[in-house]
Length: 552
Ligand code: ZN
Image 1: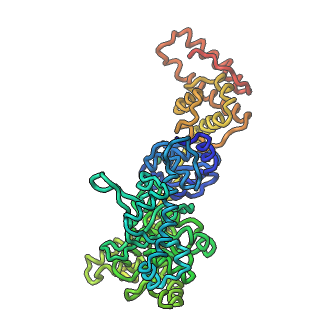
Image 2 (image 1 turned 90 degrees about the vertical axis):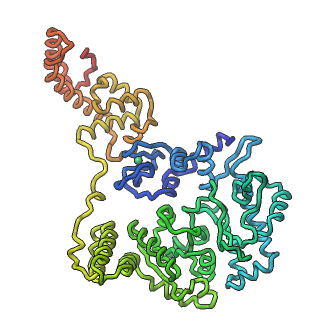
Image 3 (image 1 turned 120 degrees about the horizontal axis):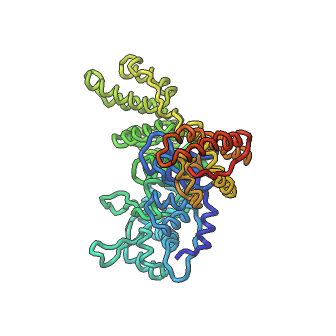
């Protein structure tokens, strides 16, 4: 079990903006942050994160809670798993009550075995020679902690001799359960290893390259709780400082490319985990606000990958460019053969993202065939339509020239969806919400309010008021108001004024509806109407907050 005190100190050390921001893209909006809700499909952001309250809330689907709740819901984890995940994301060491096995054991296994792999590389001339032949220097081997996994028996012996527990080695992805479930075997054997770090600087897995002609050139540690491939970038831990300083980030295709880029002084280079860039990488790419340079091989696979990535980055509003290495050369080879200058020139002359995308789309169609041309036009238009009007206008001339169509065809339909206010409320609603928010922040005012109104007065917000009375401030409905920065809290005098206004409005409506009331005798109706007209409403209008005592 995780020690409670340790959970509390974890909670107080994490910031919800960092936590949620590492999963989805957040944009600042006033005192809060906004995003498209990760829990329901939407195009306009109604998901709000409040740094001051350390909670999130979605106005679209109603979900909400704190950092732990977010991680639980998004990653489908239990409470302790979410705590462990948060701790590992933040490099926070949890303490456990005695006798329990835990997550930090898996981390310990990864760290220990990583150092052992490094030692094993040193003892294996074939593996070392392979790296040196590829142009990797000794200092790069050291900097990137490149290692080597010997045969399985040795791995098992090492784990035994160091008392590293087998279940945790499985959890860390160092060992795997054999298919019949009977035994375990070592992963990545006879491979050169590249340790993969999380953005916060902990080893979470390894990439392994075969040197024994295994048909799978590269494989990675399996996806584990610690190791989520789709969000990580290889080399980010070493590139981070340069990315922030130089406002540039180079995405290349392989681990060796990253190593060689760094070796040649391009220390902003990172790579995906053998997979294409996806929207899950965007939060990490956005950090430090760098220009993104895609440095890919010029072969068909490289071009396709570059096109997809460039398209995604342009739509997400990134600035940057694309470099395709010509004639089957990859950056690692160029650097290894002393052509770093050429690489520098290629990077400097990278093709900006949007023109690259437009050109590559157009290249994919035979413009002499009207049907193909129409399809190509459709694809380019769809791409340009996904960007702001200003950006779109800037690239219509290029697109129409390349396609050989009239610029007017691209039209000027302004995308209103993005500019529409997400939270539109009537003035009355705003006032009512203000009263509720004020009570959330200062519960001592609830007594004042309850003395002068009954729940009916809150109309559509009666449920909110009931929740408040029951002290259920964590309820999504109340949290929604709490984080909505278009709703303002009121000073006490403003609150009293607003309450009187509400009451006057409510009683005036009552005056009109009372005569039609079915359950009241005529005498009672007359009495109530007279009381409202001559006593209650005039007193309210004079500024007295009349205690609610009407039996209506
Ligand atoms: Zn939602």
